[in-house]
Length: 83
Image (cartoon, rainbow, N blue to C red):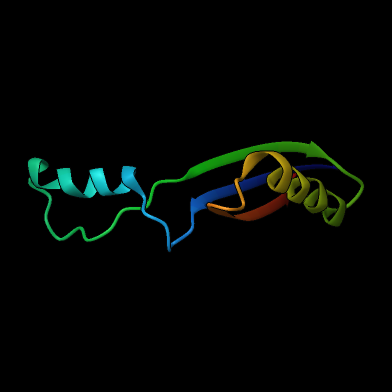
């Protein structure tokens, strides 16, 4: 079976996000008000083959834990759909 995994990787809430802070600080230059916080992360789309959704999720979890996310500084969420 073929699956698509959508992975969102974000810095931990407790950690400073310098990119997000820079965006918030520069909103006033664009005359955009009311923005209090911006967090910037990454979105990864992965196509893969597996025998089941459980197997696909395990493959994606392994990729996130060993390659895609820095678990000391980041968290991730996964959404998997068959296609």
